[in-house]
Image (spheres, rainbow, N blue to C red):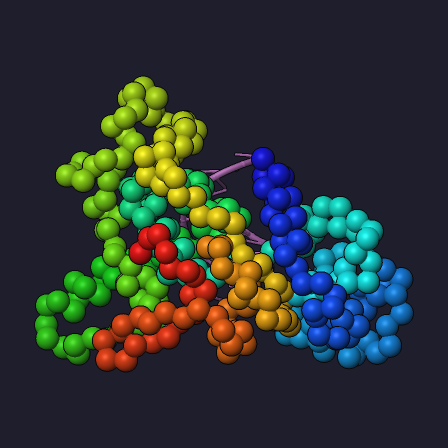
Length: 298
DNA sequence: GCAATAATAT
DNA sequence: AATATTATTG
């Protein structure tokens, strides 16, 4: 299962990769000593190569695990199936939690209830191709921290009229993502009892819900009624990652139909034509990178 | 052994 | 700060 997913993921990725012609001619310098050795290639200057894969904390001397950043590895020999199963070897690009993606996440969490809102289940409910359990787990961790700080703050600031908004920079930044999303308070959310309780729970025979991996089945059921027919497609061309990511302008072109955005998080290096979205943060609208067609939800 | 969470690391 | 990765625990 996972194998197939990964394989598929890479295949599609590979297909969308820019051809050698489209790439800047710095492939040579991207070859690290490690690789040069592994592939029996002669590289001119080790130090130069090392400099390229940059902040990759030189310690990234993973023997057979090169910088994925240099996606253009296969430039010379595309013919040979060098990457039999590179999905296993290659590092997957950094996931960017766009507002849309995050919304899906929040919706999933909300609809699952705090009890069932665990990474795996959330991931399944979100049904975003390419999204891993780790991705979700990581995000969930941060999300929980955010919620914790929220309830802490709301109670403490509510009492005395101290500083209006003692929000840390972190909070402000986080809010861009988190607070702008309607928070169906997960703690009050479904799972227990309440009005808006249309979870799968009520559709399942009690004995089934004991406590097994039946949750998986349950999640599937939930999926049918929740995110039924809107699976988020596989993310768009991840291009490259690692210290040095290389954009070419094929980027936004291929970005169109996909939902998940992976790759270089830095807006400064982003392609000139990427989609933007105005998010109203009170006084000044802030421009963020969404790279989304912003269609169905939100 | 897997999955969730906590703790680090990049 | 945002994600990833690793360690720990259930």
